[in-house]
Amino acid sequence: MRLALYQPDIPQNLGAALRLCACLGVALDVIEPCGFPLTDAAMRRAALDYGDKAEVARHASFASFRTAAERASRRLVLIETDGAISFQNFAFSTGDTLVLGRESAGSPGELYQAAQASVHIPMVRGLRSLNVINAGAVVLTEAMRQTGAWEKF
Image (cartoon, rainbow, N blue to C red):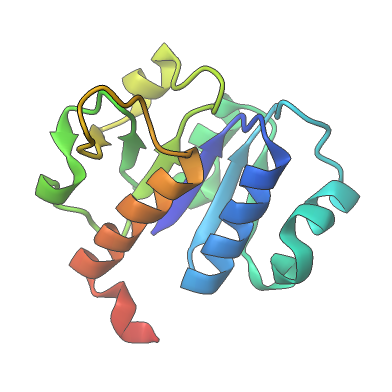
């Protein structure tokens, strides 16, 4: 199981994703360019003391992400407010990569086209969306439950 951030805009969200992935033993893909300078120092600062515990792969573009070795034979599952099916009704697989769109602009067409599935989180009518990392955590924990990943702890 992997979590991917598509061109993140907010450094604090990257930090939260690094911590989430480190704590849950899930690899993180960061698809650049980011909306902020992503230097090694900035990555260490965002990760606090969890940086060395997180498995992170940086990709210079969406094209390089799609052809990366860690993407081989993995289903791309888009988490989006207009996803086709509720995450609760989706059958996750251990090889899935859960991808989150940009905080400021959501998911572009290339993400929708590349994804094999899209899921949404049911919410109270009239509210727009959760914080992107909160949404990732909600869906990731369900995917881990379904695939037995919690049993490794």
